Length: 452
Ligand code: 5AD
Ligand code: SF4
Image (cartoon, rainbow, N blue to C red; front, side, top):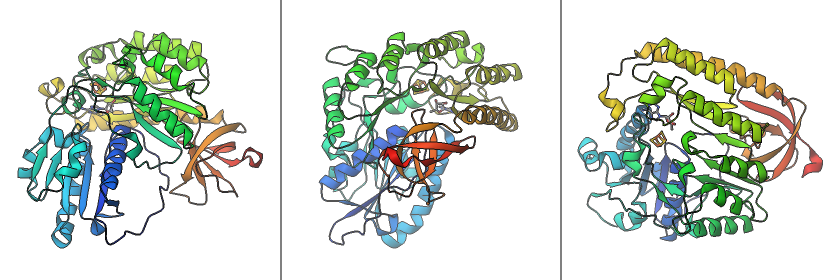
C-alpha cells in the first residue's frame, strides 16, 4: 500500500561461520512487519541476515496475493532464483499469502521451492528449515498467537510497526484477504501497550498500529475499542506520533475520530479506502456503505479536525463499472481532496465472489480510467502541496533519499514524503523543515538548524 525509498540499515559483511538468510518482501506494511518478525526469529536461532541470495543459505520470499500483479512479480522472481539456486544451492521458503493460497500446489508448479509456510505459521520456520525434505505448513489457529516482540529485527530505529489484529471478516467481493489471512483475531491490549512502552524507552518516536480492518479492533480481554486503545497509547511518554492502518469506513466511529482530535500524539492523518464512488459498484463490492455515508464520515472527520490529511484506495474497472460509475469516482476525489491515493486496475482473484462475474471492462478501458484518475489526483495534490510552500513543519527523518542521497528523507504528520537538505546528520530525529518547493508527490525543503 505504501512505499518510501530510503536507504535502510548499513549493509553488514556476513560472518562466514553463521548460516545466512535473505528475505524479499512483497506487499503491504503487514508483510513488512511479518518479515521483521521472521528476521528476528531466525537471528535468535543463530542465523544472520544476508544482503543478496548469492551469499545466503536460505532465501525467504514473503508473498502478497491481493492483486494479480504482485503474484506475477513473485513468479518472475522465482524464475530468476531458480538459475542462481542451481549454482549456489540455497533453500527457498515461500511464506505469506501466496503460500497460504497455493499450499502444496506450489511444489508442483515450481519444484525448486523447499518450504511453503502460511501467514499464521511463520513461528515454525526455525524448525521447518532444519528438515531436508519439502514441508508445507498452512494451518490456521483461531486465536491470536503472541510472538516475543523483543526478538523483532526492525528496519527502522525510530518508526515501528505494531500489529494489533490479523485477518478480516468483511468479504469485499473482489478481495482475497479473508481467504488467505483468515478471520479477525485481536491482540490483547496489554501486550500492545507493553511493546509500545518498550519501544518508546528505546527511543522510537513513531508507532504504526497495523491490522487489515483495524477499526473493528476489540481487546479480547476487556472488550475495549480501538478508540480506547488509541487513548491509552497516547499516554505513553516520549512517543511523538501514533498512526493506525487500515480503517474501514463502515466502522470508523465518532469515538475514534474524537480520540484523534483530542489526543495530540495521534496524527491527523487517516487512510480510509473508499474503492469506488458509485453506489451500485459499492453495493456489488459488498463494502457496507453508500457514497453518501462515506462522505458523511469525511465531513465528521473534517469537522473535528479541519487540518486532517486523508488518503484512500481506488479500484477502477470493477465488473460492470460504467462510464457514469467511473465519473462518480472522479467527482468523489474532487469533493474529498485526498492528500494521496493508491489506485489499481481491478484483477479477478481466486475464491472471491467477483471472480465468478464476467471481468467485462476491457483492459484498455481500465488503463485509460486509471490514467484519468491519476492525472486528476495529481492536479489535486499539486494544489494541496502548494499550501505548504514557505511553512515550517515537523518531519520525522528516516534516512537519506535513495534517489538523491545528498538529501534526507522523512515524513510529516500528514504522512507525505519530505526531502530536505541538512549539513548535520539527522537520521532518526524529529526535526523542523522549511518547505521551499513541492511536487505532486513530495515536499522539498531545508532544515531549520535550531530545531536539532
Ligand atoms: N483488484 C484490484 N485491486 C484490489 N485490491 C484488493 N483486491 C483487488 C483486486 N482484486 C486493492 C484494494 C485494497 C488494496 C489493498 O488493494 O483497493 O484496498
Ligand atoms: Fe479486503 Fe475488504 Fe477486508 Fe479490506 S476490508 S482486507 S478490502 S475484504
